[in-house]
Length: 248
Image (cartoon, rainbow, N blue to C red; front, side):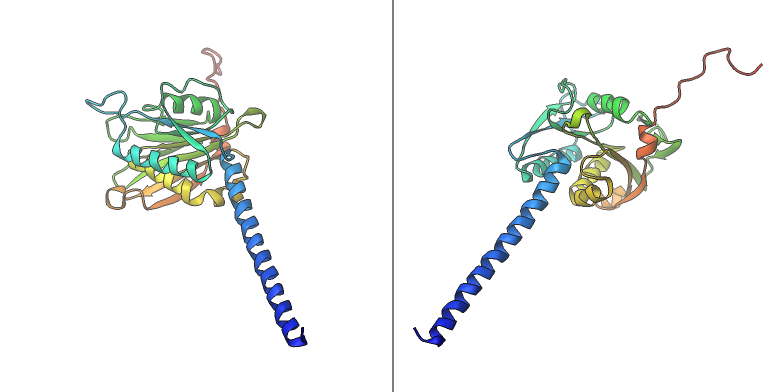
Protein backbone atom coordinates (compact mmCIF):
# COMPACT_ATOMS: atom_id res chain seq x y z
CA UNK A 1 0.00 0.00 0.00
CA UNK A 2 1.45 3.34 -1.03
CA UNK A 3 1.71 6.28 1.32
CA UNK A 4 -0.99 8.16 -0.60
CA UNK A 5 -3.47 5.30 -0.33
CA UNK A 6 -2.62 4.84 3.34
CA UNK A 7 -3.24 8.53 4.00
CA UNK A 8 -6.62 8.33 2.28
CA UNK A 9 -7.63 5.27 4.32
CA UNK A 10 -6.50 6.88 7.56
CA UNK A 11 -8.40 10.03 6.67
CA UNK A 12 -11.59 8.07 6.01
CA UNK A 13 -11.20 6.19 9.28
CA UNK A 14 -10.61 9.41 11.20
CA UNK A 15 -13.65 11.03 9.55
CA UNK A 16 -15.81 8.03 10.42
CA UNK A 17 -14.63 8.06 14.03
CA UNK A 18 -15.20 11.83 14.28
CA UNK A 19 -18.71 11.53 12.81
CA UNK A 20 -19.54 8.66 15.16
CA UNK A 21 -18.32 10.57 18.19
CA UNK A 22 -20.30 13.63 17.12
CA UNK A 23 -23.47 11.57 16.69
CA UNK A 24 -22.90 9.92 20.08
CA UNK A 25 -22.38 13.30 21.79
CA UNK A 26 -25.58 14.67 20.27
CA UNK A 27 -27.49 11.56 21.29
CA UNK A 28 -26.20 11.87 24.86
CA UNK A 29 -27.20 15.57 24.97
CA UNK A 30 -30.68 14.76 23.70
CA UNK A 31 -31.00 11.97 26.24
CA UNK A 32 -29.87 14.22 29.10
CA UNK A 33 -32.35 16.87 27.99
CA UNK A 34 -35.19 14.34 27.92
CA UNK A 35 -34.17 12.96 31.32
CA UNK A 36 -34.22 16.46 32.82
CA UNK A 37 -37.74 16.99 31.47
CA UNK A 38 -38.83 13.62 32.84
CA UNK A 39 -37.35 14.48 36.23
CA UNK A 40 -39.15 17.83 36.37
CA UNK A 41 -42.48 16.23 35.57
CA UNK A 42 -41.80 13.05 37.52
CA UNK A 43 -42.43 10.98 34.40
CA UNK A 44 -39.84 8.28 33.81
CA UNK A 45 -40.29 6.24 30.65
CA UNK A 46 -43.12 3.73 30.97
CA UNK A 47 -44.72 5.42 33.99
CA UNK A 48 -48.34 6.53 34.33
CA UNK A 49 -49.69 10.02 34.94
CA UNK A 50 -53.09 11.14 36.21
CA UNK A 51 -54.78 13.97 34.34
CA UNK A 52 -57.67 15.15 36.51
CA UNK A 53 -60.56 16.42 34.43
CA UNK A 54 -62.87 19.20 35.64
CA UNK A 55 -66.57 19.33 34.93
CA UNK A 56 -68.31 21.99 32.90
CA UNK A 57 -69.98 24.60 35.09
CA UNK A 58 -73.07 26.34 33.80
CA UNK A 59 -76.78 26.09 33.25
CA UNK A 60 -77.68 22.77 31.73
CA UNK A 61 -74.17 21.35 32.01
CA UNK A 62 -73.98 17.62 32.55
CA UNK A 63 -71.85 16.43 35.45
CA UNK A 64 -69.48 14.55 33.14
CA UNK A 65 -68.99 17.16 30.41
CA UNK A 66 -66.04 19.49 29.92
CA UNK A 67 -65.80 22.76 28.02
CA UNK A 68 -64.27 22.92 24.56
CA UNK A 69 -61.32 24.94 25.88
CA UNK A 70 -60.68 22.45 28.67
CA UNK A 71 -60.80 19.62 26.13
CA UNK A 72 -58.06 21.37 24.12
CA UNK A 73 -56.01 21.81 27.30
CA UNK A 74 -56.39 18.13 28.16
CA UNK A 75 -55.12 17.18 24.70
CA UNK A 76 -52.01 19.32 25.22
CA UNK A 77 -51.39 17.71 28.61
CA UNK A 78 -51.80 14.21 27.20
CA UNK A 79 -49.35 15.05 24.42
CA UNK A 80 -46.81 16.33 26.94
CA UNK A 81 -47.05 13.10 28.96
CA UNK A 82 -46.64 10.95 25.87
CA UNK A 83 -43.56 12.94 24.77
CA UNK A 84 -41.93 11.87 28.04
CA UNK A 85 -42.62 8.24 27.18
CA UNK A 86 -45.29 7.95 29.87
CA UNK A 87 -48.98 7.01 29.69
CA UNK A 88 -51.75 9.52 30.51
CA UNK A 89 -54.81 8.40 32.44
CA UNK A 90 -57.80 10.73 32.37
CA UNK A 91 -59.73 10.73 35.65
CA UNK A 92 -62.87 12.69 36.55
CA UNK A 93 -62.31 15.17 39.36
CA UNK A 94 -64.75 13.38 41.68
CA UNK A 95 -63.31 9.93 40.93
CA UNK A 96 -59.63 10.63 41.66
CA UNK A 97 -59.88 9.43 45.25
CA UNK A 98 -56.31 8.24 45.73
CA UNK A 99 -53.20 9.37 47.55
CA UNK A 100 -50.31 11.50 46.41
CA UNK A 101 -46.83 10.68 45.21
CA UNK A 102 -47.36 7.33 43.49
CA UNK A 103 -48.08 8.98 40.13
CA UNK A 104 -47.52 12.44 38.73
CA UNK A 105 -50.79 14.36 38.69
CA UNK A 106 -51.83 17.15 36.35
CA UNK A 107 -54.92 18.83 37.76
CA UNK A 108 -56.91 21.27 35.62
CA UNK A 109 -59.62 23.80 36.45
CA UNK A 110 -60.86 25.86 39.37
CA UNK A 111 -61.95 24.48 42.74
CA UNK A 112 -65.62 24.98 41.86
CA UNK A 113 -65.41 22.68 38.85
CA UNK A 114 -62.74 20.36 40.25
CA UNK A 115 -63.06 18.89 43.75
CA UNK A 116 -59.54 17.49 43.50
CA UNK A 117 -58.18 21.00 42.83
CA UNK A 118 -59.96 22.29 45.93
CA UNK A 119 -58.33 19.55 48.02
CA UNK A 120 -54.86 20.25 46.58
CA UNK A 121 -55.12 23.98 47.27
CA UNK A 122 -56.22 23.41 50.86
CA UNK A 123 -53.41 20.92 51.44
CA UNK A 124 -50.48 22.24 49.43
CA UNK A 125 -51.15 25.95 48.83
CA UNK A 126 -53.22 27.11 51.80
CA UNK A 127 -52.46 30.77 51.12
CA UNK A 128 -54.45 30.69 47.87
CA UNK A 129 -58.17 31.41 47.73
CA UNK A 130 -60.04 31.09 44.44
CA UNK A 131 -63.65 32.20 44.21
CA UNK A 132 -66.03 31.94 41.29
CA UNK A 133 -69.52 33.16 40.61
CA UNK A 134 -71.82 34.59 37.96
CA UNK A 135 -71.60 38.25 38.98
CA UNK A 136 -68.98 40.82 37.95
CA UNK A 137 -65.97 40.83 40.24
CA UNK A 138 -66.82 37.43 41.73
CA UNK A 139 -64.17 35.45 39.81
CA UNK A 140 -61.09 36.22 41.90
CA UNK A 141 -57.76 34.63 42.82
CA UNK A 142 -56.55 35.89 46.20
CA UNK A 143 -53.00 35.23 47.38
CA UNK A 144 -50.77 37.17 49.75
CA UNK A 145 -53.43 39.81 50.29
CA UNK A 146 -53.53 40.57 46.55
CA UNK A 147 -56.66 40.08 44.48
CA UNK A 148 -56.51 39.11 40.81
CA UNK A 149 -59.94 39.66 39.28
CA UNK A 150 -61.10 38.43 35.89
CA UNK A 151 -61.93 41.32 33.57
CA UNK A 152 -63.02 41.43 29.89
CA UNK A 153 -59.50 42.47 28.84
CA UNK A 154 -57.59 40.07 31.09
CA UNK A 155 -57.95 36.85 33.06
CA UNK A 156 -55.51 34.98 35.28
CA UNK A 157 -54.32 31.45 35.87
CA UNK A 158 -52.47 29.89 38.79
CA UNK A 159 -49.69 27.56 37.64
CA UNK A 160 -48.09 25.52 40.41
CA UNK A 161 -45.89 22.52 41.02
CA UNK A 162 -46.16 20.89 44.46
CA UNK A 163 -43.53 18.44 45.66
CA UNK A 164 -45.08 15.53 47.53
CA UNK A 165 -43.74 13.97 50.74
CA UNK A 166 -40.88 11.45 50.74
CA UNK A 167 -39.72 12.37 47.25
CA UNK A 168 -42.90 11.16 45.55
CA UNK A 169 -44.15 12.23 42.15
CA UNK A 170 -45.22 15.89 41.93
CA UNK A 171 -48.63 17.50 41.52
CA UNK A 172 -49.14 20.21 38.89
CA UNK A 173 -52.04 22.62 39.22
CA UNK A 174 -53.40 24.74 36.37
CA UNK A 175 -56.31 26.74 37.75
CA UNK A 176 -57.62 29.47 35.47
CA UNK A 177 -60.51 31.86 35.86
CA UNK A 178 -61.95 30.72 32.52
CA UNK A 179 -61.55 27.82 30.11
CA UNK A 180 -59.35 30.03 27.94
CA UNK A 181 -57.16 30.76 30.97
CA UNK A 182 -56.88 27.02 31.70
CA UNK A 183 -55.74 26.43 28.13
CA UNK A 184 -53.28 29.33 28.32
CA UNK A 185 -51.77 27.94 31.53
CA UNK A 186 -51.26 24.53 29.98
CA UNK A 187 -49.64 26.00 26.88
CA UNK A 188 -47.34 28.12 29.05
CA UNK A 189 -46.28 25.03 31.00
CA UNK A 190 -45.59 23.08 27.82
CA UNK A 191 -43.61 25.93 26.24
CA UNK A 192 -41.63 27.04 29.32
CA UNK A 193 -41.08 23.91 31.41
CA UNK A 194 -37.29 24.00 30.85
CA UNK A 195 -37.14 27.60 32.01
CA UNK A 196 -39.33 26.78 35.02
CA UNK A 197 -37.01 23.90 35.93
CA UNK A 198 -33.96 26.18 35.75
CA UNK A 199 -35.57 28.91 37.84
CA UNK A 200 -37.32 26.79 40.46
CA UNK A 201 -35.44 23.50 40.43
CA UNK A 202 -36.50 20.15 39.04
CA UNK A 203 -37.79 18.89 42.39
CA UNK A 204 -39.18 21.97 44.11
CA UNK A 205 -42.49 23.65 44.77
CA UNK A 206 -43.53 26.88 43.08
CA UNK A 207 -46.67 28.90 42.43
CA UNK A 208 -46.94 31.49 39.69
CA UNK A 209 -49.67 33.92 38.63
CA UNK A 210 -50.00 34.40 34.88
CA UNK A 211 -52.09 36.96 33.02
CA UNK A 212 -53.95 36.16 29.81
CA UNK A 213 -54.07 39.39 27.82
CA UNK A 214 -57.28 40.28 25.98
CA UNK A 215 -58.52 36.69 25.68
CA UNK A 216 -61.53 37.71 23.59
CA UNK A 217 -59.17 38.90 20.85
CA UNK A 218 -56.11 36.69 21.30
CA UNK A 219 -57.51 33.57 22.94
CA UNK A 220 -54.89 31.66 24.99
CA UNK A 221 -51.89 32.93 22.99
CA UNK A 222 -50.94 36.13 24.85
CA UNK A 223 -49.70 35.10 28.30
CA UNK A 224 -47.36 37.03 30.58
CA UNK A 225 -46.02 36.30 34.09
CA UNK A 226 -47.45 38.51 36.84
CA UNK A 227 -45.81 37.31 40.05
CA UNK A 228 -44.04 34.46 41.78
CA UNK A 229 -46.38 33.90 44.73
CA UNK A 230 -44.74 30.76 46.10
CA UNK A 231 -43.98 32.14 49.57
CA UNK A 232 -47.46 33.63 49.99
CA UNK A 233 -49.20 30.52 48.65
CA UNK A 234 -47.39 28.25 51.10
CA UNK A 235 -48.16 30.46 54.09
CA UNK A 236 -51.16 29.20 56.02
CA UNK A 237 -53.56 32.01 56.97
CA UNK A 238 -53.61 32.93 60.64
CA UNK A 239 -56.55 31.54 62.55
CA UNK A 240 -59.06 34.21 63.63
CA UNK A 241 -58.73 35.32 67.23
CA UNK A 242 -61.37 33.88 69.59
CA UNK A 243 -64.22 36.19 70.40
CA UNK A 244 -63.66 38.36 73.46
CA UNK A 245 -59.85 38.38 73.28
CA UNK A 246 -59.53 41.86 71.77
CA UNK A 247 -58.16 44.84 73.67
CA UNK A 248 -60.59 46.20 76.22
